[in-house]
Amino acid sequence: MKTKHIELCVSIVICWCTASAIPQPALKEVFKNDFLIGAALNPWQVSGASTGEVQIIKKHFNTVTSENALKWGNIHPTADRYAFAQADSFVQFGQEHSMFIVGHTLIWHAQTPRWVFHAQDGTSLTKETLLDRMREHIHAVVGRYKGKIRGWDVVNEALNNDGTLRQSPWLRIIGEDYILKAFQFAHEADPEAELYYNDYSLEEESKRQGALELVRKLQAARLKLTGVGLQGHYDIERPTPRQIDETISAFAGLGLKVMITELDVNVLPTPGPGGADISMRFNADPKLNPYPNGLPEEIQQRLARRYADLFAVFLKHRQSVTRVTFWGVTDRSSWLNHFPIRGRTNYPLLFDRDCQPKPAFHAVVALKQNPAGSE
Image 1 (cartoon, rainbow, N blue to C red):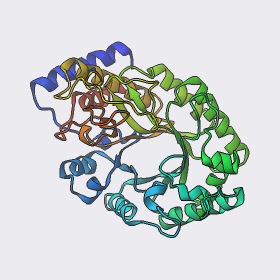
Image 2 (image 1 turned 180 degrees about the vertical axis):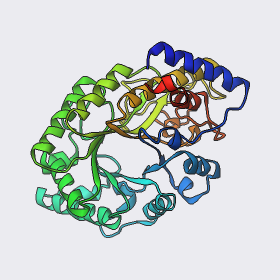
Image 3 (image 1 turned 135 degrees about the vertical axis):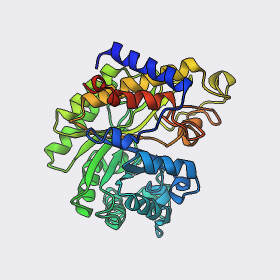
């Protein structure tokens, strides 16, 4: 789709949206011939406590990802105890609504308890012992949901921004092979499950090259790797559509599925380099929280155009992009209200705090409702 057509389409939708109520076609139906549409869920949504968000999930999404329930610290908090209740509820929710269920995540440097890497006396584990611990955990978790969770983020965020391997405890104790072993163990536990590598800022050249090298090593080792997840934690301007286009093409060129796994668009000014490194934290400053009482119309329009541009790229690559998952359901439940500064009011998703579709929603839908929008 040409840029001018996108801008015209979005402008019409924004004007219409301010003048009258527009019907809400289900996103999963709009894009049913292109890719799955999903969201990351929290316990309040899974339990039904957040009724408005549950209605959105049921209507619009055909795939769901666990926001935190399957991370090591939640599901395996101590060496002798698994806590499956939240994860069981999440999986049951997905099954009840015939959704493609994604497990996030098996191996990550964050939200992994200290005990995982240390013996009872506090000393670091040996390589062999940590590998045994990794294998036991992956087999227990993946094995429990075999045939139910159909895709796993096996390894999450293993790379630095320069494309080198992050100096995590996994790397320091086991070495580079920890990534290969994680994929090996996951495949052993469920040979039919799709297996993914997931990371942020892969649109940046140096990090993308590091990820491509990692993928080639996995492929050379003949390990199952179904696809790569581009987290999609974007802001209102960066990365550019061209960068995203090139990134999708690069991974698809290696025969991989590509997923947009954690999509949101930050509209607030943020210090630092951007991205989704959870170690980034900054002090509160009113200048960095400029819209506490609502998003100005100008920014709504920019957000709508941004989402239209993003989905135009995704649609261009519909043969390679198999899933687009938002990281959250509404602005109210977005993690960006508290990252990297706590207590801000952000507006990164397609549905507002009252569970109503925003101009960005209608801009995305318009790409498919107008025949020229999907060319």
